[in-house]
Picture 1 (cartoon, rainbow, N blue to C red):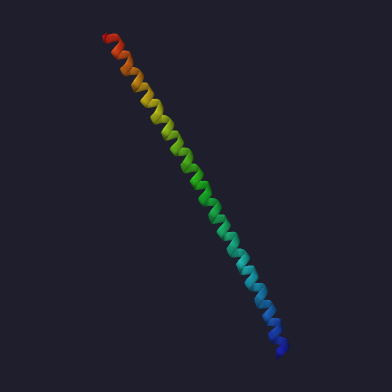
Picture 2 (tube, rainbow, N blue to C red; picture 1 turned 180 degrees about the vertical axis):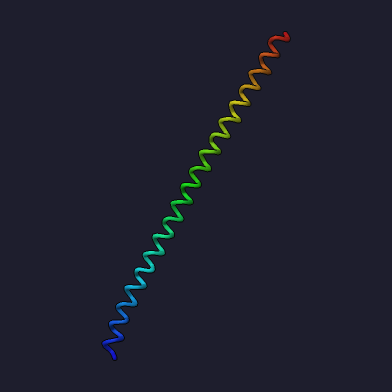
Length: 71
């Protein structure tokens, strides 16, 4: 009886270790997906910011040119 408990104990330990490794791999995949999403969101926000700055500079230049033409 003790022999069987030892064998099943080792098999159970190995199965638990395999399950933990599978869970770790799954969590790493989720984490990499989150990082990819975060990087994409930062890139999109950077492009929106650049677009807004260019629009602001264009409007500022347009206002300055109208002021010069009025004088």
